[in-house]
Length: 481
Image (cartoon, rainbow, N blue to C red):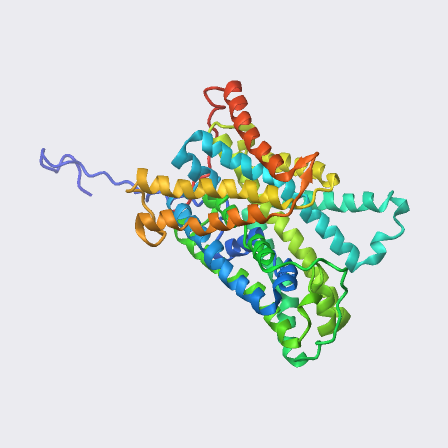
């Protein structure tokens, strides 16, 4: 080995030492969502399966019903999916649509976007545990009997519904991967009976022309009403955007997930209805909840029971996925200083916003006993207002930040970004005009919905007065590009 004595003065001394290789970058501490688990979670946030299509067939008939189910995605779901694909790939932020609106339109409108979604969840989230219990009673009639040991039947149902909320909250605290993996398996569970319906229907070609399902005498709906019901079955695509920071390679994954989900949801609606058309079953025999009886005509009691079990899986899956979506809104707002930092607390291992999940779950549990039914006009008003803000953010960001990297773009340049929101907004306007007359607390549901929107303005003012400089920053979840 060379030494300083034998080396020229200008030559540096060579010292033998062990070279330590550079440390490898540490892997992320929590597992992020990949494509197909995200598709499954989106499926439940939007659809939850074929259930809910009965009234479309009842009102419009088979041919027009299938046409509506095929055309509506082009005018309604696909434009929303394109919008979400661009904004999710450009801004894969925690909070999704709230983060887009805040960046494009400012703090005030970002707050309103989150407010509209969380207030709407009060009317949405109470229905899924109730549906779960309803299907449970239908699958096991003995469950609804002899409830004197635990109080009334209503008390027992409420306990089961509250238990479902608790289980979904725990699953969500376990992380997005646990929720999405559960959604994937539930998708297979609820799809299997409908796959059997599609396979068995050709063997009953024309055989059910004089059959009669259990019919409660529901009022026949028209073509426009069928369109409005179809809109409900294709609503909620933006809910998947709130977990963008917890998705692997979101700039690539989101656009693909949205397009795959649109296709899968459309097929899950059209194929079973088309199969039943072959059997000759009168369209008037379709009404809310009749899929189980229709399955019994094709495959007997076992297939009927499988359909009811699938309906339970659907209700569970929808609630579970939406807990994941809604809980990211308080988290993102806390990270931005728009809510107290406690809502930004993350589970040390799964990075789930456990405080936000627990608070929202407690609120939804308290609403279970109120007996809220889905109020169409209120939902249309709140969802329509939030969707309008999202399309406005798409246009604002195209104008204000033309150099923002957009791995996926709405086709047609700036004009495409402007006009892609026109068909959904027109459909929302139609649904608001033709919505059924509903009342709550002694006023029309439309007026009540407007009151809820105005309350968001007041809430923002109160929040600003309480903490003018914001509530302080908290740790954020960084996305993987």
